[in-house]
Length: 350
Image (tube, rainbow, N blue to C red; front, side, top):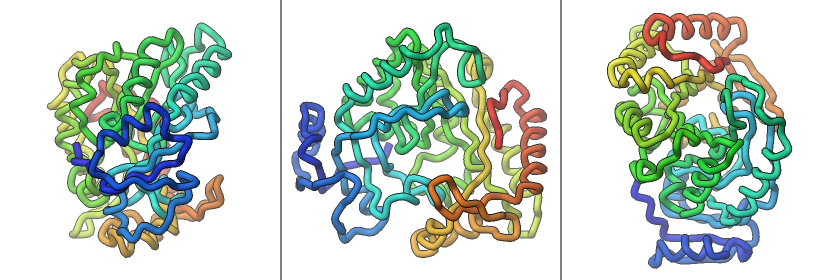
């Protein structure tokens, strides 16, 4: 896990409840500064990565909106945090905020009350679908990495306990970090952790400041042993040629990745492990920002000859792989999984 030790804590007055005070107490040497809004921060005079390392924001989440997903989960729960220590070159959260440090929301009781009200109003028993056969699933980490947040606030452990003990709800989140603190909590298979995986040499370039792919794979057995349900998340799938122009380079690298996974996991872990697959979508604004922050990554992410434009539901100008090419890429990926890790069910792929 990264050594996150902020030198500056920004907070809104309504965030300093007991939980907010406990977070501030963890960092007695940090300067504290009150701000009016957690999502409208002053100019901090720091570069992209230093903001993520040195600044922590405490806020109160006003909106308790719960959105239908149907992919990684049935629903997307209200955010527990926003922003991340990592600096992944394709991160969609960074696209929407000019300054994007980790922001923790301290009104956890209110957030969990909203989830409880929501799930109690749903049909029970739950209709079986690909998200889960028994429980209504809620993604708790769409805008942050919960593995990092867990060590910053007791509120995240409180959330884990809420889902573990709830008779109808289950939590899920994707992560690029291995936080061994999570192994001390027994979720009784009511928290699904999804380790994001891609070929290691690509991850080193685009998953900036996250744990290595090798470390993530090596931890899967441990997390299953600790009581988690463990899935993997092949996301984003980036299509690229080799330095010699070999157009099959990306698929050969994924074949190697699947073999790594097959060799590392115990049989009982394989029996419960499923995957989700999401091909890359990139963003024009982020592309321009990355040319200054991480230009080498853009050589993989911005490949106009393979991509087509798409306006997102939020009005952003995105690019994704040409739909005709992508259908072929999807078929290739499905065949690779069938050949190398046939025990791994694809929950969804697009």
